[in-house]
Structure formats: C-alpha cells, structure tokens
Image 1 (cartoon, rainbow, N blue to C red):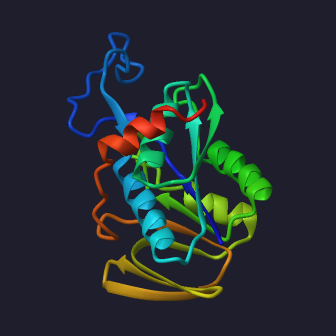
Image 2 (cartoon, one colour; image 1 turned 180 degrees about the vertical axis):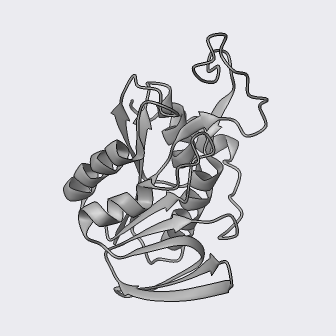
Amino acid sequence: MRLLVGVKRVIDYAVKVRVTPDKTGVELKNVKMSMNPFCEIAVEEAVRLKEAGIVKEVVAVSVGPKQAQETIRTALAMGADRGIHITTDMRTDQELQPLAVSKLLKSIVEKETPDIVVLGKQAIDDDSNQTGQMLAGLLDWPQATFASKVKVEDKNLTVTREIDGGVQTLSMTLPAVITADLRLNEPRYATLPNIMKAKKEKD
C-alpha cells in the first residue's frame, strides 16, 4: 500500500510576520521558513502507518520554489521514503490557489496510484482549508477531513473527526483522502543522522 503526503513550505509559526512596504503581502525575504505544522502531523501519521506495517511506501509531495526541497528533506528525515517536488515561482501564500494545487496533486496521484492521500487540514499562511476537499472531489474519492484518529484495516478506513457538537466517526473504502487535525498526533523530531541522510538525497 502506498501513501502520498502533501507538505507545504510556510513562514515558521514562531516568526513575527511583517507586511511588505507596498502592503501587497507579507515579507518573505530573510524570514525563517519551515514545514506547515499541519503537514508535519500528516507526515507523522503517514510514517506511523508505515511503521505499523500497513503502508509500504510514503511519498512526500511539495509544490513551491526551489527552497521547498528543504521541506521535502524534512519529511524524508521524519521517515518518508521518496519526495516529489513540483517547482513554481508563484507565491504559495497568495498566487498559487488551492484549486491549482489540487489539480497538480491529482496528476501526481494518477501517476503514483496511492491508496491513501494525507494532507494537513490547512496551511498557516493562507488558512484556506480547501486543498484536501478539492482533491477528493477531482479524484471522486471519499474524504475524511479534520481527522483526530485514523484506523486502516485491509481496504477499509475508519476516521474519527472533530465537529462542533463533539466527534464523528466515518467509515469508507480506500482509496481516500484524509486531512489531519491538530490532535491526530504529536510529530517526532527529525534526528540528526536522518537529517544528514536526507541532505544527501538527489534534488
């Protein structure tokens, strides 16, 4: 079973964001960037499914500038097996819209044929919370958003998700799209040996 996990490069959550002088966006130059926190949770869940013997391969995908390779390498250091980088010079916090990302991911899904796609529920730069839902719609796959617990048995997926009134449990048949919520897990830190190993991977 193959799993595809999306990772996005964003301004680090601890950075104080500054508006550009022309007030058209936020300043990205000389600013610390890191993996979107919800994407970290998605990667962690993917790696846990691999460690449990449910998934055989985890493929990390990122759409962004050349520097997004660093985000993919972080995913590799956390335990992903391969990385796919779709290069663009568009600003991923403004110009590159969720529908375009969904269409790009759809083409990767059609090529890689994963059984599960896991994405963060939203990115902390645009807060759109749309890519996972749009991807599921484009693929005509079932979806389980805001997942706080994931269970996979054979080709069956059970997801517990948080809703306004409490929790909801969904059951569906794979392939499916999952978006990770904050309480799904606590991501591991990438160890130094794994970081060094990931840096040696080809661009």
